[in-house]
Image (tube, rainbow, N blue to C red; front, side, top):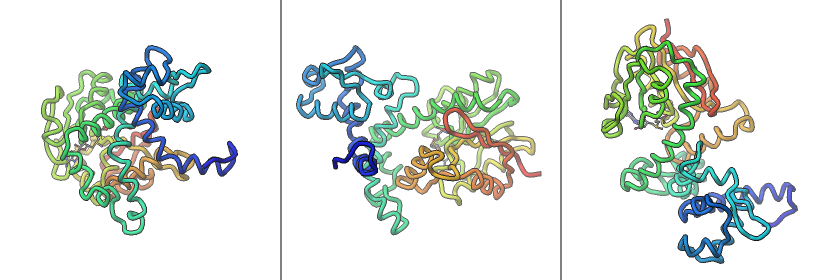
Length: 328
Ligand SMILES: C[S@@+](CC[C@H](N)C(=O)[O-])C[C@H]1O[C@@H](n2cnc3c(N)ncnc32)[C@H](O)[C@@H]1O
């Protein structure tokens, strides 16, 4: 589709061509384009041999990336990384490399099932792949590794912002429920080195961690009696019934003066106010039975679990810290 630049038709054409952009980014990572450009600008012919690519198609892909301002196309035809392109490198602070790979390799095909999902209520991933998302990951170590790399990148971006936004210094003991690789708990320990911490997650996830761990099932119970419980990016994985079960486990473990800190993106009142969270909600619709929620929806869920939302603290990483305490 070719339309007058800046016209409504051009805007719509760009949206419709979004399927190409995901794959352009994926090709760049898979070939090692960002790494090859760290030493300075290079041409497609020069890059092709080194990256195992055919020069003609590679040049067209690089031009596609330049059109999206991931690369800069210099007057002499060579290509350089832009600030956006640098985020495809693993070592760049705030890198989105893992997130891009997960979208291209794990989510992309499932999105083709979205229409069925809207018509039938089925989960697109299950329809397209014939099995649930986490079963599909478990069946191939490289898929699981790609997903974990994406999650690790996201938690690294969020953890620093969470401990900067919410004062944890008053807590002597902290349990991170569904804490994954422990990125958030390590950020907590940097702020409060004396804190007694526990990383709680499924036994195979916490095995081998350098942090104090307890393996278990958060639907059944979590370690009791801590000052603070963290629940970061857990509730959005689940529908309301299961999210409530997790919250009830936390509530049962809490003392009357314990605090629960739910770290989640919060859906805006109107979609245009925070499109990134709306897209995250669509990832949940495509992949899982989960969903993002508004602050009012979190407050209602917490209340049903015997907890009261006492503060909603936004962070610089887009997620909020929703502070909850046992109802009196
Ligand atoms: C989206 S990840 C969030 C990880 C981490 N809290 C973060 O913010 O990056 C959800 C976590 O819930 C854990 N989980 C899933 N089911 C669980 C269960 N039944 N009991 C304990 N942990 C579980 C997963 O292993 C995973 O680490």
